[in-house]
Length: 301
Length: 246
Image 1 (cartoon, rainbow over the protein chains, first blue to last red):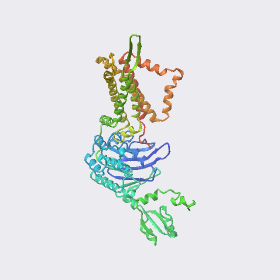
Image 2: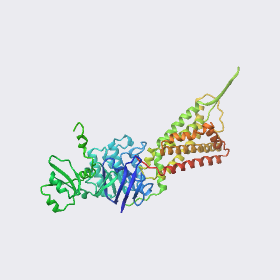
Image 3: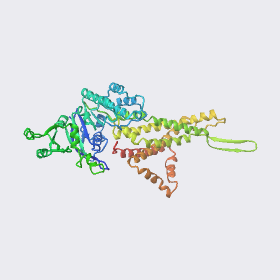
Image 4: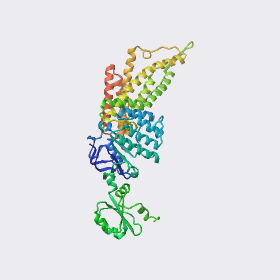
C-alpha cells in the first residue's frame, strides 16, 4: 500500500524557501531517511506530510487523503522534533499516560522500560529536561505510540553518542517487531545508513534522489589519476562532481553506469566506491565551489 | 500495520480531558484571583457615615461585585490566551484536527465559565463569613447574599451570561491576534474609535442591550447568541491556520 504520494508538491513561505518540487511515493512498512543540507526543505516537507502546513501547489496524499485537517492522518501519524510542545503542568509520566489515551497501539510497558533505561526523570515537566533528554523522551513517544506513520525530524539532536546508538538500535528492533512506515531525517547519514531502507535526498526544495540505500551506495564511483587521463576518460561519462586537484592527481565522481569495457579502457585510473553520505555531499554541492574558495581570494589566501 | 479509525466525538472528549490537566494553571489562577477579590470585598466597598452630638452611624456595604469584575477580566484574558501558539501547537502533539481542537477549546471554556459563575455566586458566602468572623459589626444580610434558591439561580444565570460574553470576546480577540499581530492595534481603534464621536458609545450600547434587559431568558438569548457568533467566527478563521509553521 502506498502511504505517501507527492506529485510536484510545492510549499512556499512568504519568505521564499520551502519545498519547490517534491515528487515521490513511499510504500507501507519502510524506513526512509530524508537527507539534505540545512534549509533544503526537509522539515517543511515532513510538516506538510503531517498535515501541519498547507500546500501551495502540486498534490499530496497521505493514507489517500490530503493531510491538512484530516483526522485519519492525524490519528495514524506522529511528527516529532525537538520543538514538540507539551504543557509544563504535566510531568513526563503524565505525558506518557495521556499518549495511551490518544494512540490505540500505545505500548505503555515499552515506554516505561525505555524511559527507565535512558534515565529520563519521570516527575518533571519537559522544560526541565536537557536537550538530549528531551529528544530521547520524544523518541520514546514515537516508538511506543506505534503509529502507522512515524516521522522523526532530527531525533538525535543533543543526544550523546551512546544514547544515539541505543536509540537507533531500539528503533530498528521495534520496527522489525512491529513494521510500520517511518520517516527519519538526519544530518548524519553515516549514522542511519545501516538503519534505513530507502534514501530521499532533497536539495533546494527538490527531491534529487529516491533510491534504496543499497542502490545509493553503488550509485557512483570516484575515479582518480593523472589530470589529463581522468579528463579524457570522463568526457563520455555522467560526471557528478570534480574534486579539488591534489597536485597533479585529479578526481571526479561519475555515475556508476559505465560498461566493463569502458572501465578496462581507463587503464591506470583508480576506481573507488563512494559512500552514501559522500554521494549526498557531492550531489548537493553548490556550483560556486568549495569552502576553500571562500578563503582563496582573501588575505588568508 | 492496520490504520486506526477514531471518532470525532471521542477525540473531542479526549482533548477536553487532556486540556483539563494541561491547563491546571488556568484553574489555579481562577482561585487566586477570586481570593484576592474576596479579600478586597471583605474590607468593604462603599459606605456612608453620619453623626450627631449623641451618636454616630456608619454603614458599610459588602458585595461580591469585585469578585465578579475580577472574574470577567480573568475569563477575558484566559480565553485569549487559549488561542496562543503554545496551546494550539500542543494539541497537535496529540491526535487532532483544527476543528476538534477548537470545539474542545469551546467546551472547555464553557465548563470554565460555569465553574467560575458558581464560584462567584458562592463567594458571597465566603465574604459573609469573613465579615462575620473578623469585623465587629452588626450585620444585615441583603437578598442576594443569603437569598432564596431562586435568587441564587438568577445571579448564577446572569453571571454565566456575562462571563460567556467576555469569554467569546476574549477568544475572538485572541484569534485575530493569531491571524495578524496588527490586530493588537486595529481592534482597540475599532472599539474606541466611535467613542471619539460619542464618548460613552460602548457603555451605552452594552448597558441598553444587555444590562437593561428585564427578562433573564432574553438576556441569556442575547449573551449566548453574541458569544456563539463570535466563537463560530473565531473557529472559521482558525480552521485554515497552519501550525508549527516556523
